[in-house]
Length: 89
Image 1 (cartoon, one colour):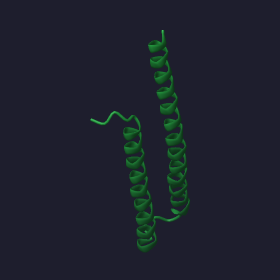
Image 2 (image 1 turned 60 degrees about the vertical axis):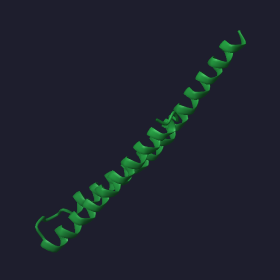
Image 3 (image 1 turned 135 degrees about the vertical axis):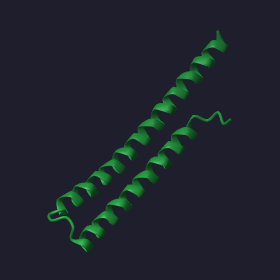
């Protein structure tokens, strides 16, 4: 087992980004199917909203990934200095 706390964060980030890529493909496929079949009248606002939602989710995921890395680094430093402080006493 790897003791690095960054591995689970990285794996979760990769999984989330892959999920968002799949979501984007579904939105594109849905848009193309709608245009081809003309099944839904006025569906353009829905398609734009879906695109915007996926893009916003990608931005939020990137921001939270950086925040998670920062929190992990902080926690590592706190634990490290507490451990070194105990050894000095």
